[in-house]
Image 1 (cartoon, rainbow, N blue to C red):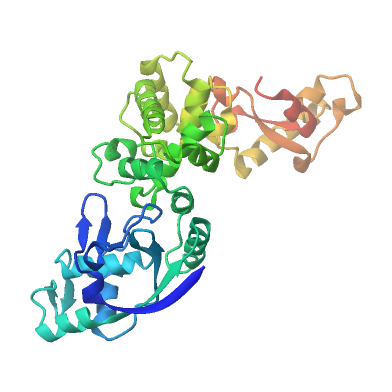
Image 2: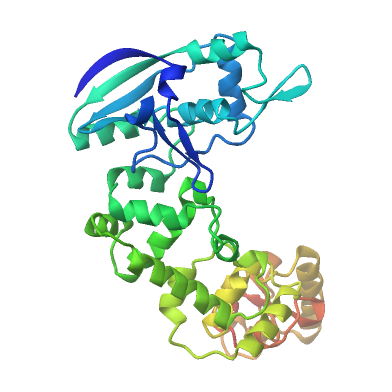
Length: 388
C-alpha cells in the first residue's frame, strides 16, 4: 500500500459538506471530491455534546486533532479514518451544534471573526493511502483499534461493504426509523452502532445455519435486503402475537430469533400466556424474570430458567433439627426416604452437610419455598427425586 502525507485546511476539507440528520452521516467534503462516510464506515457517533464539542475546543486552543487517513479511490478520495472528527467540524461550521464560551452557547456564525478563521485555517495532517480493497480494509480495522473501538458489526460492515450492507444500514441503523421504538421493546442495542443490524443478521443467518460473516459474503452484492427485513419483521410480529400484553422490560435482548425457530409452529393460548407471565413476574420464588418467556414457550418444564429461589440457611437448619429430633426418637434415619427403605442407611443420622433441601411439593406444582414445604434429604435421594 502506498502512502503520501498531505496538508489540508479545515476550510478546504469541509467545502461542500452535507450532513444527513436522519441517518447521522457526514456525506461529502473537498467540494464533492471527498466521501466522508463510505459504505464501510460506521455511522456518526460523536453527536453527544461532549466528543463533538471537544473537537472544536481543541481547534480553538490550537491543539492538533490527530492524523487523518484518506483512501485514494478510483473516483476521488474517501475518509479511511477521521470521519468522526471531520463530521464534527463540518456540523459545527454549518451550524448544527453549539459550544459554550463564557457561560453562553455559540454556534459557528456568531463567533468572533478571528476564532472562525482559527478553525477554518487549522491544518489537518492527512495520509493519503492507495492499495487494494483488502489492504485498505485491513488498514481500516488496524487504525480503529484505538479511540472509540469499532463494534463487531461495524467491522463486518467494513469487510463486506456493498449494496446489501448499504441497504441494511439504511433500514436498521437509522434511529429515526418509525419502527425503531417497537423493535427496541425486544432488541437491545444502539442502532447507530449497528447493534440492531447485528441482531437482525444473527437471526436470519442462524435460520439458514450459517455464520453472520458467511451470510454477508453470500449477499454482499444483492441490490436489496428483502429476506433480512422479512425475517426480522416475522420474528417481531410473532412475539407480539404470542405475548399480547404490553412488553416487559425483561423481554428486551432475549434470544427471540432462536425462540422463533424453536416455537413458532406451536399453537399458544395468548390470553393464558399473558396471565401466566403476570403470575410468574409476581412470584417471589422466581429470581430470573428474563427466563419466564422461554419457560412458558417451552411447555413449563425447565424450571432452571426461572432461577427458583432456594431454601435459605435458617430454613434448612430448622428443617434439619425438626427431622433429626423426630428421627432419633423413632430410631430411624433423619432422611425420610432412607427411613422407609431396607438398606443399611435405614437408621443413619446424616450431618446437615450430607443433606440437601427439597420441596415436599415441587415449586412447579404449587409448592412454596418455606419451612412448611422444606424437607431435608440425603444427597443421593434428593438428586434422584428430581421434580416428582
